[in-house]
Length: 257
Image 1 (tube, helix red, strand yellow):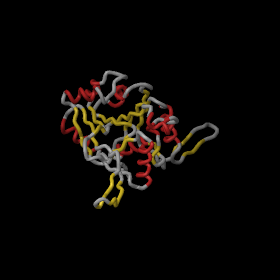
Image 2: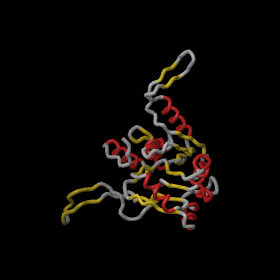
Image 3: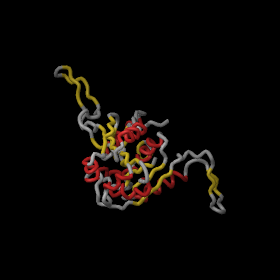
Image 4: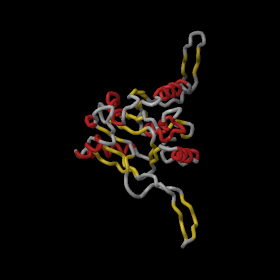
């Protein structure tokens, strides 16, 4: 199974971080959010990733090069520059393709450009800025059962406001925000058949507009409902929320040891 991750957007609503690095490289617990996303898939045995680059793509390339090169024990022959890596490396056994998809391409355009890397059979695609408590095995089994071209993971959006508990007119507690109990939204974590790429015209195509609408019109788009945790990282408060969950040992997306 191959996974495509969209990592080329400008991330303007998180400008506090994205003036120096692309949003998928903003760190949660000392590691980029894209690493957390890949760890979710890897915990289900998936290790083949293609990352759609755009804005500050060189930053992502540099990080993966350093991640692969600077972990675990190694020996360096200073006379020749030869590097020998030893077996105690803690780098995960992932294959990561870093694919240039254009600085101004839209989401559909980036997915289309990933087709040569992931689109020869059933594949998965997600955004590089969202974490979820999603069972990848169940998602894939659902997709295979219905036999359509595309599956979207539908999630409950986080509640916009916290709420209060009262005893009569007396406020007795302030509660944290929870997932909304109303409505479903696009949570990413797509499963696509090769024919789904035919619904995307080119770089200017926004995946969430004509491609998904036309797939739905043709009866080829199904929703895998995931009622558990989901959180995108569009703003600094959302980033801080994810940090708080991770630092407190309460990150629902952490399904690995």
